Picture 1 (spheres, rainbow, N blue to C red):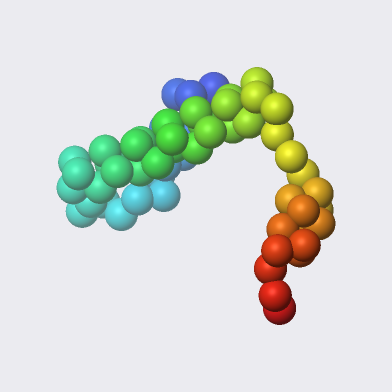
Picture 2 (cartoon, one colour):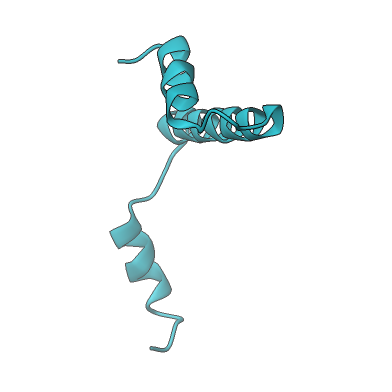
Length: 62
């Protein structure tokens, strides 16, 4: 698995040379939010999408 440093280096390499500090901050923010969400989904009880669709299909009209 890539370390956080490697992920940040990858982001920096993908950004244009004239990007702003705000551009870098935004991408780091998104990376952190995705990382947090993945950690939460691994720790909490989650429901598969198919199960949710089955439950909601009782109430939703297509």
